[in-house]
Amino acid sequence: MLVEPRSGLLAAWGNALLAGLVSPDEAALAIVGVDAVHRVDGLPGEAGPVGLTLALGRLRGLGATGFRVALPVPGHPLGLSGPPDFNARALEAEEAVVAYGVPYGMVPEVTEAGPAGDLHVEVVWRVLPVREAPPADVPSLGEAERELAEALRDATAVLSRLDVAGSGPVAEAAMDAYRARAERGRDVLAPGYPPRAVRVLEMAQRVGLLVSVAYENGHGGAVSASEIAARGEALRPVERVARRAQVAAYNAYVEGGEVRR
Image 1 (cartoon, helix red, strand yellow):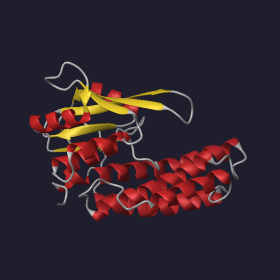
Image 2 (cartoon, rainbow, N blue to C red; image 1 turned 180 degrees about the vertical axis):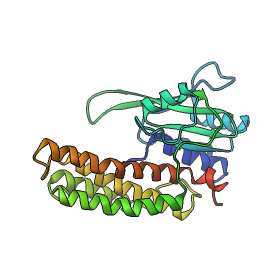
Image 3 (cartoon, rainbow, N blue to C red; image 1 turned 45 degrees about the vertical axis):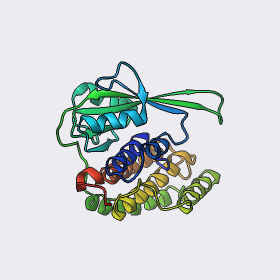
Image 4 (cartoon, one colour; image 1 turned 90 degrees about the vertical axis):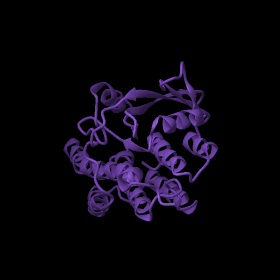
């Protein structure tokens, strides 16, 4: 969770574009990020895949007034509203973008080629019909912030108890990456998002980092199968809270009515 999901980038910068805060080229560049190329397939009126700038313009022309994020995992359809076909594809990708104002959503299909360290990544966003209904289990920013404060305490306590909180090269590298990212600037969301959304997203990423350290930093003090299982049981609700908060932050535009100018 140190890296923004592609759906988060598309929704955030798409919202900034709709608000007139960035140009189409700026939005497309930020959404593509380190990937090689993004295309959008299945847009009404288009016979095949098109580029991001054209796709975002077409969605705006069709009536899109905002974009929100879904980050579902098995057993937790976070941000989804149906129908079943869209939900199934989003669950497989573990992310999706849903437009407001038009009944369409987009699910990324990622293709990678090349050796490790030099991957060529292409993304095709599949446009599918969605049900215009409230998304599942998305909290308000205030609710997400309160939950995160508790989750951060819980995650720290679990890691300390399991002897994985701050030891080992993996944990140190993860913390260094987090600090370096924070030092590059506070603009973790697209221009115009309220400060509270930025704060919630940063806290969610910090909680996500601690969860990742717990899962990836060996077995630490959990030397038995039962203790390893207990670690997973303790961290699953913490990870769930962090994902809910991510979605709340990215969706602050549509939930709040507009990006602040």
